[in-house]
Length: 133
Image (cartoon, rainbow, N blue to C red):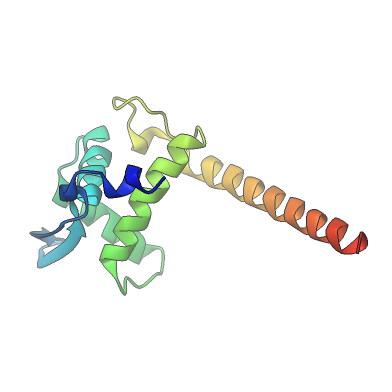
């Protein structure tokens, strides 16, 4: 099983630091090559360069009232969510389908319902297991 991961191209996990301007502020972000590739893919879907995408993500994160303590961790989670939402059928795999055109509120509502349904199923299973003891 692990060979699928350990046998991958080492460039995927090698850290790369990239310098850019986010909202006029010079900064640098250090991520593994895998995540830079995913972020570039996300940006291409909406005709955004990497720094444009990161500026937008940073701005929207701050506007939502959250502090970005670790921007690199936030970006890794964005990449994971991008693929998870594709697997869930919420983000079309077609690269010509802009993410900005998706109904984010509807997707988030469906995601909450799925999470609530999974939580209820786990609780029911736990109750069933304890009742049989």
